[in-house]
Length: 85
Image (cartoon, rainbow, N blue to C red; front, side):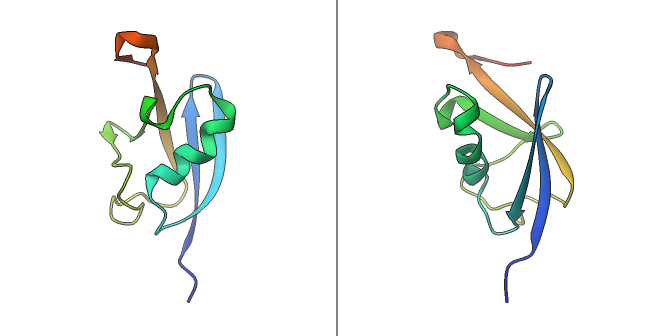
């Protein structure tokens, strides 16, 4: 049986990306899909569901990410170590 597919939106500033994912995909897969659009390394990206930071290694199902969620992407700002607001 094929894992359940879900649709996610990932938003940062005025950009929104739409992805089809499996519930068994780790969050790190989403970051890989975003790499062509940002000049950042994966460790300089964070993805949030509301205020909750998602774990890169855990899958979407284990983190209770529902279908049609709008996730938030935050990037590290240069060498300062600060993150987007």
